[in-house]
Length: 398
Image 1 (spheres, rainbow, N blue to C red):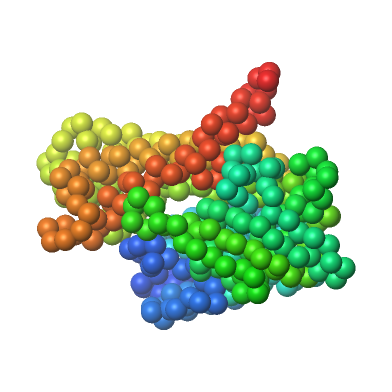
Image 2 (cartoon, one colour; image 1 turned 180 degrees about the horizontal axis):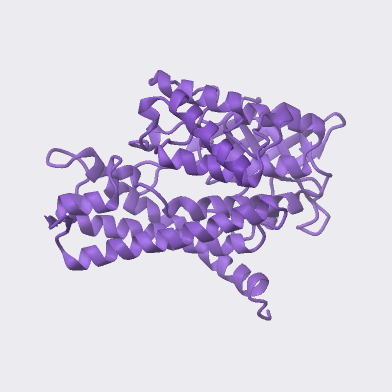
């Protein structure tokens, strides 16, 4: 305990000296969030400085080994760091699919060359990654994918199409599932490849959603050459890696109901309710809205505690496992309820789409409310998650 107390004091002192003032408040929008990558333009110098300082300490990925750019912290130390970051309201130095999805599977399945090549770049925010999983005919039945990778001796030749590829139009590299044996059982003929999105033959087309914008894209591969050194794990052994990565992804998606609504412009739901519904004796004026806001805050707190326990179990080598489907399902529903409640709080001000009479955060709330409906599809539909929970968590018969 004394060592942790000393560590906490050192962390607090370092954060006070190194976390810039503008990084001590939540992002005002998705554009105000640092995803890193080759094409990232830093309009706020403090955003870049914050990432550089955190990366130098290894605290972008605090529990990753130091030899791969991480902080080498124990689970207990990482928890103290997270608590101190929350205390000063510091925003994440970097948001990245490399951190939440690819990095953990590379640590488990990648060879030494792949770890040293890719993990430090993830930590420093030099490369932005996207995920090539779903296809027009392979969504919930992901193992039915048809993107082919033909063995050409020293490289693979990739042909096919992916869809719902989040942020592919901004990504530098992709981690991609491909079929390397068309004659094998569908789960057995899949491999896991990494390749540069600037490779000849890669093209991307964004997909606009009902919300007016979208992170999703169609991604096409035509005779894309991928060096064999970019195969992760064994040939035709990609399904095992794919399942593990999906577990990490579902935990990440499950956490999207937390924190401050980007559309709130940094205001909490409680603050927004007081502003739009009214305030009486320091409380939300409408008793019904007050009850719903408090209930949502309680749900968030309980869910966060459960998620933290799961993360600690995973770091101890016990997960994430099928329980990630529970988190994905619940986090999805919580995020949808959150936006339903925000729309109710804003009232008629949440009915705007464009033009005068509406603040940017009000227009953003309308779009995010529409966008939240897709949460039950991405990362595996809610129906798929219910099946996983029934079979692998509850042990119910087929």
